[in-house]
Image 1 (tube, rainbow, N blue to C red):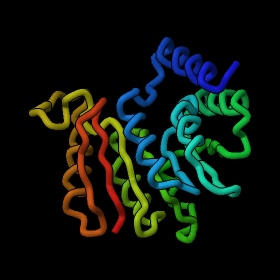
Image 2 (image 1 turned 30 degrees about the horizontal axis):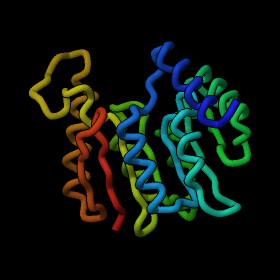
Image 3 (image 1 turned 90 degrees about the vertical axis):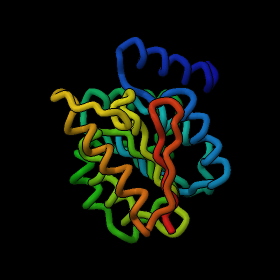
Length: 199
């Protein structure tokens, strides 16, 4: 099968199994950002089945270029490894089985990334953001998905079930706009993308 056919089958299987993967519209915008940025190093928080990392890998620049992606669930980790191997991208994409809130803190400060993509536990986004800034250099771009959280973040939503995650995402939006280290915007496509450029 061709690359696009394999990607389509990975996407189809993920959707059938209700695995949260990036939506088409935000993915297309990120592809444009990657084309412009020409990243050598990408860090992804939340691998799922490897769909986004595989998509991003096409835009890596440099022989030593690499994506490091962190996944907490072992079943997802194993599926991602399988999908990445099927695409013959195991040399370009490193999947780490870990809790990103802890693992990111263990990454040395001199290990810098051009792009950091956050798509994991919504309640931990502020932790991820602070670590992402630490692992960035001037001009690095931090992208966080699902910022609208199905319309909850920008509404008066206050139900118990998703209250904590919703409040944390609201805090993220506030912090990214006020943090003098960042130039940020919220793009209301898909489930919402927060895009921050590190000054």
